[in-house]
Length: 423
Image 1 (cartoon, one colour):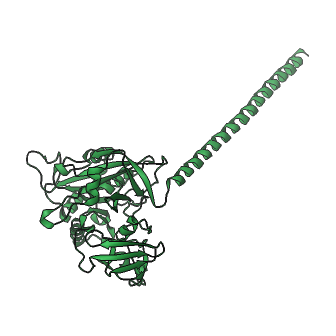
Image 2 (image 1 turned 180 degrees about the vertical axis):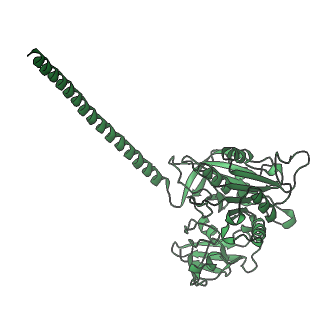
Image 3 (image 1 turned 45 degrees about the vertical axis):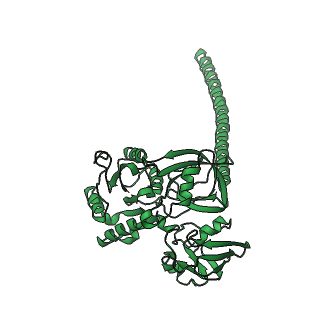
Protein backbone atom coordinates (compact mmCIF):
# COMPACT_ATOMS: atom_id res chain seq x y z
CA UNK A 1 0.00 0.00 0.00
CA UNK A 2 2.84 2.40 0.81
CA UNK A 3 4.49 1.76 -2.52
CA UNK A 4 1.21 2.70 -4.29
CA UNK A 5 1.03 6.03 -2.43
CA UNK A 6 4.67 6.76 -3.28
CA UNK A 7 3.99 5.94 -6.94
CA UNK A 8 0.98 8.25 -7.07
CA UNK A 9 2.90 11.11 -5.41
CA UNK A 10 5.75 10.58 -7.86
CA UNK A 11 3.38 10.75 -10.82
CA UNK A 12 1.80 13.92 -9.46
CA UNK A 13 5.20 15.60 -9.03
CA UNK A 14 6.31 14.55 -12.53
CA UNK A 15 3.04 15.81 -14.03
CA UNK A 16 3.46 19.15 -12.25
CA UNK A 17 7.03 19.49 -13.51
CA UNK A 18 5.92 18.59 -17.04
CA UNK A 19 3.12 21.17 -16.86
CA UNK A 20 5.58 23.86 -15.71
CA UNK A 21 7.96 22.96 -18.54
CA UNK A 22 5.13 23.07 -21.08
CA UNK A 23 3.98 26.48 -19.80
CA UNK A 24 7.51 27.84 -20.07
CA UNK A 25 7.76 26.48 -23.62
CA UNK A 26 4.47 28.12 -24.63
CA UNK A 27 5.63 31.45 -23.19
CA UNK A 28 9.01 31.17 -24.94
CA UNK A 29 7.35 30.32 -28.26
CA UNK A 30 5.09 33.36 -27.98
CA UNK A 31 8.07 35.64 -27.24
CA UNK A 32 10.07 34.09 -30.09
CA UNK A 33 7.19 34.59 -32.49
CA UNK A 34 6.91 38.24 -31.46
CA UNK A 35 10.66 38.71 -31.87
CA UNK A 36 10.57 37.03 -35.28
CA UNK A 37 7.69 39.25 -36.33
CA UNK A 38 9.61 42.29 -35.12
CA UNK A 39 12.68 41.18 -37.09
CA UNK A 40 10.56 40.62 -40.20
CA UNK A 41 8.94 44.02 -39.75
CA UNK A 42 12.36 45.64 -39.23
CA UNK A 43 13.77 43.98 -42.34
CA UNK A 44 10.70 44.96 -44.33
CA UNK A 45 10.99 48.54 -43.08
CA UNK A 46 14.68 48.63 -44.03
CA UNK A 47 13.81 47.43 -47.51
CA UNK A 48 11.07 50.05 -47.80
CA UNK A 49 13.45 52.80 -46.67
CA UNK A 50 16.08 51.49 -49.08
CA UNK A 51 13.61 51.52 -51.97
CA UNK A 52 12.53 55.05 -51.02
CA UNK A 53 16.15 56.23 -50.98
CA UNK A 54 16.82 54.63 -54.36
CA UNK A 55 13.69 56.26 -55.77
CA UNK A 56 14.73 59.62 -54.35
CA UNK A 57 18.19 59.21 -55.87
CA UNK A 58 16.82 59.26 -59.44
CA UNK A 59 16.28 62.57 -61.16
CA UNK A 60 15.30 64.14 -64.46
CA UNK A 61 17.45 66.62 -66.32
CA UNK A 62 20.45 68.09 -64.51
CA UNK A 63 21.18 68.06 -60.77
CA UNK A 64 23.63 70.17 -58.74
CA UNK A 65 26.73 68.41 -57.41
CA UNK A 66 29.46 69.85 -55.20
CA UNK A 67 33.14 69.11 -55.77
CA UNK A 68 34.43 67.73 -52.47
CA UNK A 69 37.87 66.56 -53.56
CA UNK A 70 40.39 66.84 -56.43
CA UNK A 71 43.11 64.25 -57.00
CA UNK A 72 45.88 64.54 -59.60
CA UNK A 73 46.24 61.05 -61.06
CA UNK A 74 49.61 61.12 -62.82
CA UNK A 75 52.98 62.85 -62.68
CA UNK A 76 52.43 65.03 -65.73
CA UNK A 77 49.20 66.30 -64.15
CA UNK A 78 46.94 66.07 -67.20
CA UNK A 79 44.38 63.77 -65.51
CA UNK A 80 42.46 64.96 -62.43
CA UNK A 81 39.74 63.05 -60.57
CA UNK A 82 36.80 65.01 -59.17
CA UNK A 83 34.73 63.61 -56.30
CA UNK A 84 31.16 64.89 -56.57
CA UNK A 85 28.43 64.84 -53.91
CA UNK A 86 24.78 65.84 -54.50
CA UNK A 87 24.07 69.33 -53.24
CA UNK A 88 20.66 68.20 -51.90
CA UNK A 89 22.27 65.57 -49.63
CA UNK A 90 20.31 62.65 -51.11
CA UNK A 91 22.06 59.51 -52.41
CA UNK A 92 23.36 59.34 -55.95
CA UNK A 93 21.60 57.17 -58.49
CA UNK A 94 22.94 53.61 -58.95
CA UNK A 95 24.78 52.93 -62.18
CA UNK A 96 26.36 50.10 -64.16
CA UNK A 97 30.14 49.98 -64.18
CA UNK A 98 31.35 51.54 -67.42
CA UNK A 99 28.59 54.14 -67.71
CA UNK A 100 29.14 57.90 -67.90
CA UNK A 101 27.56 61.14 -66.72
CA UNK A 102 26.91 64.31 -68.70
CA UNK A 103 28.39 67.46 -67.16
CA UNK A 104 26.99 70.90 -67.93
CA UNK A 105 29.11 73.99 -67.23
CA UNK A 106 28.65 77.71 -67.93
CA UNK A 107 31.89 79.09 -69.36
CA UNK A 108 31.87 82.74 -70.29
CA UNK A 109 28.66 83.57 -72.11
CA UNK A 110 27.95 79.99 -73.18
CA UNK A 111 26.95 76.68 -71.62
CA UNK A 112 28.87 73.52 -72.54
CA UNK A 113 28.15 69.83 -71.99
CA UNK A 114 30.61 66.95 -71.97
CA UNK A 115 30.43 63.25 -71.07
CA UNK A 116 32.84 61.71 -68.57
CA UNK A 117 33.00 58.08 -67.48
CA UNK A 118 32.48 57.21 -63.83
CA UNK A 119 35.89 55.96 -62.75
CA UNK A 120 35.09 53.98 -59.63
CA UNK A 121 32.49 51.50 -58.43
CA UNK A 122 29.11 52.58 -57.07
CA UNK A 123 29.06 54.48 -53.80
CA UNK A 124 25.72 56.01 -52.67
CA UNK A 125 27.48 59.14 -51.37
CA UNK A 126 29.34 60.39 -54.42
CA UNK A 127 30.39 60.01 -58.05
CA UNK A 128 33.95 60.21 -59.32
CA UNK A 129 34.97 61.36 -62.78
CA UNK A 130 38.55 61.55 -64.06
CA UNK A 131 39.16 64.24 -66.67
CA UNK A 132 42.10 64.48 -69.05
CA UNK A 133 43.10 68.00 -70.04
CA UNK A 134 43.15 68.37 -73.83
CA UNK A 135 46.15 70.55 -74.58
CA UNK A 136 46.55 72.52 -77.80
CA UNK A 137 48.52 70.71 -80.52
CA UNK A 138 50.45 73.24 -82.60
CA UNK A 139 51.46 70.65 -85.22
CA UNK A 140 47.83 69.91 -86.12
CA UNK A 141 46.24 73.27 -85.17
CA UNK A 142 44.05 71.53 -82.58
CA UNK A 143 42.97 74.06 -79.94
CA UNK A 144 42.98 73.23 -76.25
CA UNK A 145 39.84 71.57 -74.87
CA UNK A 146 37.64 74.34 -73.53
CA UNK A 147 35.76 72.29 -70.91
CA UNK A 148 38.63 70.06 -69.76
CA UNK A 149 40.90 73.12 -69.38
CA UNK A 150 38.21 74.92 -67.41
CA UNK A 151 37.74 71.96 -65.07
CA UNK A 152 41.49 71.69 -64.47
CA UNK A 153 42.11 75.40 -63.98
CA UNK A 154 38.92 76.76 -62.42
CA UNK A 155 37.00 73.98 -60.64
CA UNK A 156 38.14 73.28 -57.09
CA UNK A 157 36.61 72.02 -53.83
CA UNK A 158 33.30 73.73 -53.17
CA UNK A 159 32.47 74.41 -56.82
CA UNK A 160 29.03 73.37 -58.07
CA UNK A 161 28.51 71.65 -61.41
CA UNK A 162 25.40 70.20 -63.03
CA UNK A 163 25.18 66.49 -63.86
CA UNK A 164 22.69 64.23 -65.61
CA UNK A 165 21.95 60.69 -64.40
CA UNK A 166 24.45 58.00 -65.47
CA UNK A 167 23.78 56.30 -68.78
CA UNK A 168 25.62 54.39 -71.47
CA UNK A 169 25.86 50.92 -73.01
CA UNK A 170 29.59 50.27 -72.57
CA UNK A 171 29.14 47.74 -69.75
CA UNK A 172 30.08 44.15 -68.97
CA UNK A 173 27.28 41.61 -68.79
CA UNK A 174 26.84 40.32 -65.23
CA UNK A 175 26.17 36.84 -66.63
CA UNK A 176 29.35 36.71 -68.71
CA UNK A 177 31.59 33.73 -67.96
CA UNK A 178 33.94 34.26 -70.90
CA UNK A 179 37.47 35.53 -70.22
CA UNK A 180 37.56 39.32 -70.47
CA UNK A 181 40.31 41.23 -72.28
CA UNK A 182 40.52 45.01 -71.80
CA UNK A 183 42.62 47.03 -74.23
CA UNK A 184 42.80 50.66 -73.11
CA UNK A 185 44.91 53.70 -73.88
CA UNK A 186 45.36 56.98 -72.02
CA UNK A 187 42.33 58.22 -70.12
CA UNK A 188 40.36 55.33 -71.62
CA UNK A 189 41.20 53.47 -68.42
CA UNK A 190 38.42 55.29 -66.52
CA UNK A 191 35.35 53.15 -67.35
CA UNK A 192 37.49 50.01 -67.24
CA UNK A 193 38.65 50.80 -63.70
CA UNK A 194 35.01 50.99 -62.64
CA UNK A 195 34.33 47.63 -64.32
CA UNK A 196 37.33 45.97 -62.71
CA UNK A 197 36.30 47.09 -59.23
CA UNK A 198 32.89 45.51 -59.73
CA UNK A 199 34.25 42.33 -61.31
CA UNK A 200 36.80 41.48 -58.62
CA UNK A 201 34.06 41.68 -55.97
CA UNK A 202 31.93 39.05 -57.69
CA UNK A 203 31.85 35.58 -56.06
CA UNK A 204 33.33 33.89 -59.14
CA UNK A 205 34.84 36.45 -61.53
CA UNK A 206 36.08 35.24 -64.93
CA UNK A 207 39.75 35.44 -65.97
CA UNK A 208 40.64 39.07 -66.74
CA UNK A 209 43.50 40.45 -68.84
CA UNK A 210 44.16 44.19 -68.95
CA UNK A 211 46.44 45.92 -71.45
CA UNK A 212 46.97 49.53 -70.39
CA UNK A 213 48.86 51.72 -72.88
CA UNK A 214 50.44 55.10 -72.08
CA UNK A 215 53.42 57.06 -73.33
CA UNK A 216 55.63 56.59 -70.24
CA UNK A 217 55.63 56.66 -66.46
CA UNK A 218 54.77 60.36 -66.25
CA UNK A 219 51.44 59.63 -67.97
CA UNK A 220 50.72 56.44 -65.98
CA UNK A 221 47.47 57.04 -64.05
CA UNK A 222 45.70 55.04 -61.30
CA UNK A 223 48.79 52.88 -60.85
CA UNK A 224 48.14 52.05 -57.19
CA UNK A 225 44.45 51.28 -57.74
CA UNK A 226 45.17 48.87 -60.59
CA UNK A 227 47.90 47.08 -58.67
CA UNK A 228 45.63 46.74 -55.62
CA UNK A 229 42.98 45.09 -57.79
CA UNK A 230 45.59 42.71 -59.19
CA UNK A 231 46.66 41.79 -55.64
CA UNK A 232 43.02 41.25 -54.63
CA UNK A 233 42.19 38.87 -57.49
CA UNK A 234 44.93 36.61 -58.81
CA UNK A 235 42.90 35.93 -61.95
CA UNK A 236 43.47 39.56 -63.04
CA UNK A 237 46.57 39.91 -65.24
CA UNK A 238 47.79 43.48 -65.81
CA UNK A 239 50.14 44.35 -68.67
CA UNK A 240 51.28 47.98 -68.88
CA UNK A 241 52.68 49.20 -72.19
CA UNK A 242 54.94 52.28 -72.44
CA UNK A 243 55.34 53.42 -76.06
CA UNK A 244 58.25 55.77 -75.14
CA UNK A 245 59.83 54.67 -71.82
CA UNK A 246 62.09 57.24 -70.15
CA UNK A 247 65.69 56.04 -69.79
CA UNK A 248 66.76 55.54 -66.15
CA UNK A 249 63.27 56.55 -64.94
CA UNK A 250 60.94 53.82 -66.22
CA UNK A 251 61.99 50.30 -65.28
CA UNK A 252 60.80 47.20 -67.18
CA UNK A 253 58.92 44.58 -65.10
CA UNK A 254 58.64 47.18 -62.33
CA UNK A 255 56.87 50.12 -63.97
CA UNK A 256 55.84 48.48 -67.23
CA UNK A 257 55.80 45.11 -69.02
CA UNK A 258 55.82 46.06 -72.70
CA UNK A 259 58.29 48.63 -74.02
CA UNK A 260 56.59 49.21 -77.37
CA UNK A 261 53.21 50.00 -78.84
CA UNK A 262 50.62 47.29 -78.28
CA UNK A 263 49.52 45.32 -81.34
CA UNK A 264 47.22 42.39 -82.00
CA UNK A 265 49.97 39.79 -82.12
CA UNK A 266 51.36 40.81 -78.72
CA UNK A 267 47.85 40.49 -77.31
CA UNK A 268 47.40 37.00 -78.75
CA UNK A 269 50.85 35.89 -77.53
CA UNK A 270 50.00 36.99 -73.97
CA UNK A 271 46.68 35.12 -74.06
CA UNK A 272 48.51 31.99 -75.24
CA UNK A 273 50.96 32.30 -72.33
CA UNK A 274 47.98 32.44 -69.97
CA UNK A 275 46.43 29.36 -71.64
CA UNK A 276 43.36 31.36 -72.73
CA UNK A 277 41.61 30.68 -76.03
CA UNK A 278 41.45 34.01 -77.93
CA UNK A 279 38.28 32.97 -79.80
CA UNK A 280 36.46 32.49 -76.47
CA UNK A 281 37.35 35.89 -75.00
CA UNK A 282 35.29 39.08 -74.95
CA UNK A 283 37.32 42.17 -75.92
CA UNK A 284 36.68 45.65 -74.53
CA UNK A 285 38.44 48.56 -76.25
CA UNK A 286 38.59 52.06 -74.84
CA UNK A 287 40.78 54.84 -76.16
CA UNK A 288 41.42 56.92 -79.28
CA UNK A 289 39.63 55.72 -82.39
CA UNK A 290 42.80 54.89 -84.37
CA UNK A 291 44.11 52.83 -81.42
CA UNK A 292 40.92 50.76 -81.27
CA UNK A 293 40.50 50.39 -85.03
CA UNK A 294 44.06 49.13 -85.52
CA UNK A 295 43.80 46.52 -82.78
CA UNK A 296 40.39 45.33 -83.93
CA UNK A 297 41.62 44.91 -87.49
CA UNK A 298 44.68 42.96 -86.34
CA UNK A 299 42.66 40.68 -84.07
CA UNK A 300 40.00 40.11 -86.73
CA UNK A 301 42.74 39.18 -89.22
CA UNK A 302 43.76 36.45 -86.76
CA UNK A 303 40.32 34.90 -86.66
CA UNK A 304 38.70 36.74 -83.73
CA UNK A 305 34.97 37.23 -84.33
CA UNK A 306 34.11 40.94 -84.35
CA UNK A 307 30.92 40.10 -82.41
CA UNK A 308 33.25 39.76 -79.42
CA UNK A 309 34.39 43.39 -79.76
CA UNK A 310 32.95 46.12 -77.51
CA UNK A 311 34.30 49.66 -77.64
CA UNK A 312 34.04 53.23 -76.42
CA UNK A 313 35.94 55.99 -78.18
CA UNK A 314 37.97 58.47 -76.09
CA UNK A 315 39.34 61.02 -78.52
CA UNK A 316 39.40 64.75 -79.02
CA UNK A 317 38.54 64.13 -82.69
CA UNK A 318 34.90 63.69 -81.74
CA UNK A 319 34.62 67.17 -80.25
CA UNK A 320 35.36 70.31 -82.23
CA UNK A 321 38.67 70.10 -84.08
CA UNK A 322 38.13 68.67 -87.59
CA UNK A 323 36.30 71.10 -89.92
CA UNK A 324 32.96 69.84 -91.23
CA UNK A 325 33.26 70.58 -94.94
CA UNK A 326 29.58 70.03 -95.74
CA UNK A 327 28.29 72.13 -92.82
CA UNK A 328 27.63 75.89 -92.86
CA UNK A 329 29.63 78.32 -90.76
CA UNK A 330 26.44 79.25 -88.90
CA UNK A 331 23.13 77.38 -88.65
CA UNK A 332 19.89 78.05 -86.81
CA UNK A 333 18.58 75.08 -84.84
CA UNK A 334 14.97 75.18 -83.64
CA UNK A 335 13.58 72.82 -80.99
CA UNK A 336 9.94 73.08 -82.04
CA UNK A 337 8.07 71.65 -79.04
CA UNK A 338 9.93 73.85 -76.57
CA UNK A 339 9.99 76.88 -78.85
CA UNK A 340 13.72 77.37 -78.22
CA UNK A 341 16.22 78.43 -80.85
CA UNK A 342 19.99 78.20 -80.86
CA UNK A 343 22.89 79.08 -83.11
CA UNK A 344 25.19 76.26 -84.20
CA UNK A 345 28.72 77.51 -84.94
CA UNK A 346 31.32 75.74 -87.07
CA UNK A 347 34.37 75.06 -84.88
CA UNK A 348 32.48 75.77 -81.64
CA UNK A 349 29.67 73.24 -81.69
CA UNK A 350 29.61 69.65 -82.88
CA UNK A 351 26.65 67.39 -82.25
CA UNK A 352 23.05 68.56 -82.01
CA UNK A 353 22.59 66.64 -78.75
CA UNK A 354 25.24 68.77 -77.06
CA UNK A 355 23.60 71.92 -78.38
CA UNK A 356 20.20 70.82 -77.05
CA UNK A 357 21.64 70.18 -73.59
CA UNK A 358 23.36 73.55 -73.57
CA UNK A 359 20.00 75.13 -74.31
CA UNK A 360 18.23 73.15 -71.58
CA UNK A 361 16.28 70.96 -74.02
CA UNK A 362 16.19 67.30 -73.00
CA UNK A 363 16.58 64.58 -75.64
CA UNK A 364 16.62 60.99 -74.41
CA UNK A 365 20.05 59.47 -74.99
CA UNK A 366 22.27 56.66 -73.81
CA UNK A 367 25.32 55.60 -75.85
CA UNK A 368 26.13 59.05 -77.33
CA UNK A 369 27.93 57.35 -80.22
CA UNK A 370 25.11 56.43 -82.62
CA UNK A 371 24.76 52.77 -81.71
CA UNK A 372 21.62 52.45 -79.54
CA UNK A 373 19.01 54.64 -81.26
CA UNK A 374 17.53 56.00 -78.03
CA UNK A 375 17.96 59.63 -79.16
CA UNK A 376 16.15 59.14 -82.50
CA UNK A 377 14.47 62.48 -83.28
CA UNK A 378 12.15 63.66 -86.04
CA UNK A 379 13.44 66.31 -88.47
CA UNK A 380 10.70 68.79 -89.36
CA UNK A 381 12.87 70.96 -91.58
CA UNK A 382 16.41 70.99 -92.92
CA UNK A 383 19.16 68.41 -93.35
CA UNK A 384 21.74 66.84 -91.07
CA UNK A 385 25.03 65.03 -91.65
CA UNK A 386 27.26 62.44 -89.97
CA UNK A 387 31.03 62.09 -89.91
CA UNK A 388 30.46 58.39 -90.58
CA UNK A 389 27.37 56.22 -90.89
CA UNK A 390 26.05 55.56 -87.34
CA UNK A 391 26.13 51.95 -86.24
CA UNK A 392 22.43 51.99 -85.33
CA UNK A 393 21.36 52.94 -88.86
CA UNK A 394 23.17 49.86 -90.17
CA UNK A 395 21.26 47.53 -87.88
CA UNK A 396 18.32 45.47 -89.07
CA UNK A 397 15.76 47.11 -86.78
CA UNK A 398 16.61 50.52 -88.29
CA UNK A 399 16.38 49.42 -91.93
CA UNK A 400 12.96 51.07 -92.34
CA UNK A 401 14.01 54.42 -90.84
CA UNK A 402 13.62 57.35 -93.24
CA UNK A 403 16.93 59.13 -92.72
CA UNK A 404 15.60 62.30 -94.34
CA UNK A 405 12.96 62.54 -91.59
CA UNK A 406 14.78 61.15 -88.55
CA UNK A 407 18.25 61.67 -87.11
CA UNK A 408 20.51 60.68 -84.22
CA UNK A 409 21.38 64.01 -82.53
CA UNK A 410 24.20 62.43 -80.52
CA UNK A 411 26.36 62.14 -83.67
CA UNK A 412 24.87 64.51 -86.25
CA UNK A 413 25.34 68.15 -87.21
CA UNK A 414 23.39 70.56 -89.43
CA UNK A 415 24.12 70.51 -93.16
CA UNK A 416 21.54 73.21 -93.96
CA UNK A 417 21.38 76.77 -92.64
CA UNK A 418 18.25 75.92 -90.63
CA UNK A 419 17.25 72.68 -88.90
CA UNK A 420 13.99 72.18 -86.98
CA UNK A 421 13.77 69.18 -84.62
CA UNK A 422 10.55 67.87 -83.09
CA UNK A 423 11.68 68.06 -79.46
